Length: 310
Ligand code: SF4
Image (cartoon, rainbow, N blue to C red; front, side, top):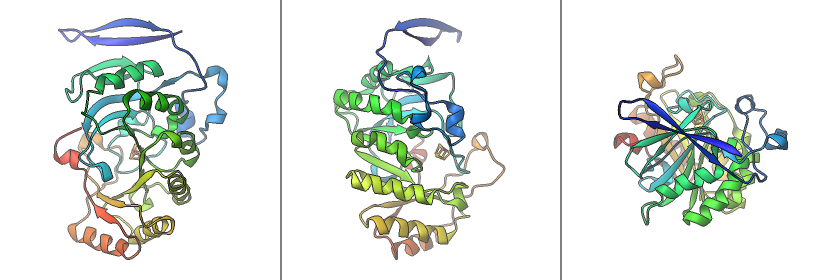
């Protein structure tokens, strides 16, 4: 038996709590342990089955226009998972790094009228919330984002078949691309993947081998995959050449999106390191450099921010 709290804002702003008691069937799923995720030693096999529950730690669920990469402009149901084990210098989602005690759920798609609920969230409740968003013909796909969604791979393995069957919507994964072992657990349920390729000079993270393994898994499974590379004024061109070669050696059909970094607002900054948008001439030079190696290299900034969208 799992108790799930719904927090309701009253008219005068006071919070009332309704306790819902929900009976769920516990199957072979389990939630992750945040400190294990951060310490890079998280692996599904390390989690004892006696503590397993089909529940996830969420940040939010909402309906929005995808602003990045191959799916730009499409309408998606976003499921933003909590927790990330990376610390990219340019991260605009640092609030997702640890699991909060509550998450927020949009009442109706695009309304931005959020309810607050307690974390973690049972699988059956998450299914209900996605169904609430799923108005006829509105959405093109469901986006799994974060944080790092693959830190919830055991949960996703249970959740994705159900949500696919129920909504009939394609599943799109946004990921740091550094956890191929977790990807294997959910590959059969994915339709497309947007994989970040982290440049050490820009992100402070380095995962060349894992990125290559990750891409190979997507190709072997016939998943529609594209690469996103955040570039700043500090980008090392040699890393861009290495990225283009990594992709081209696997397949010339994989599109690469260079995404000029969006400078962080004061309240988003977590490090003293300034992350500056690249100069116009830098972007032109880098695209030309990469196109000598890889066939498809496009440049797209975060369009949702230009539209003042979430
Ligand atoms: S992987 Fe994404 S959420 Fe995690 S630190 Fe990097 S930018 Fe932030």
